[in-house]
Length: 490
Image (cartoon, rainbow, N blue to C red):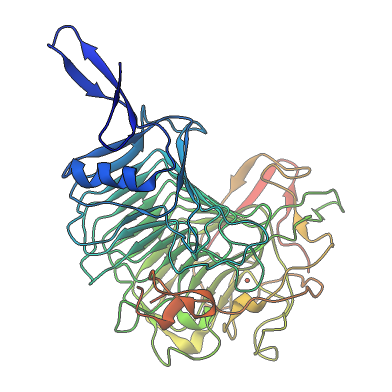
């Protein structure tokens, strides 16, 4: 049976014979009337679910705002594939599809939908300062799961803000995220931007985010676990970033943050080249697989002597092409252990036009870069019998490195040309600083410079760190083994 709601929306109702004329509400069909959808949320009150219809598209002229505790927006039947309902941002100068940051929105849920930010290839990014999804704020126990978020007009595919430092216990899981932004200068966007404390970002697949795959803005006591982060068609500045000392002052509070068991894939060859490497037709790399400390990212000294503080990074694996797998500087009280290189890996790139430390930052790039003079109380576990060691050197503004253009520098693997599939061997050990070998690529064009903010108020070149979060870039080292892939622990 079909009934017409007071908002002009056609609603399906199923009458059960066993319950006298009891109507069960089904999905809300697609409509171009965003205000009518908003009215349903407003009138539904606490615990209301706006259930969208599978396979349907909803063009939004403004964001849908949650209005009470424990509300949910989801697709009927909770599909996990392309039949999830799609919310498309269409409003002029709008960048957000759903918003749950106002006070009093504990338990807000976004489940099993697709969010299309609707950024056109010719459209300048940062039309307005918000992400596709804006959650967090002064709230607890929020959930985003089985959501696809892509092509944001703003600075992130998904932002979970700290609010007045009361946000806690957000869960971001099982989402497929990206592409986010482009790799043109200052057109980048994050995959997940997390500033909510005691939260979990887990089991997500993040592909072709161009700023950070997961950017952690402090978010003390949070866990980032079992995510797959990769590049296919564009360069990513950082896979997982712990570089923003704002908003959690003093000294960048990453205490008890755990980054573990994530898989980070740089670019792979898309064409056959020589025996160990080929060309990537998008010149796609991850410039820094995991970045720790503000100086690794920002070369302008904007944070003075502030440091990223606390946290554990362990059990993560790197494969593919990077400039640096890890860069560590201006940090203290970190544990970095039992991470590994698996399969074929290379460390490539050259100074770009925005590099300001060309006489000091190692070139060609190295696998693991540690600026010893700027860190303290660090526990590092790296292999004692392999070339993958921390190299002591200046780690300042590493996103300025540029990938090679049209050269056989990308390793084979991960489904790429001549990919190798096999077992892996691991070694373990301890050391602080020895040499690592790699090969630099040819100069690229353009360049990446530090970017910036966590919060919904930052945009463009002032994003990360200049407003309160709501204050938010050789001999191939990967060795192809006939019997399997080499793996070494660090």
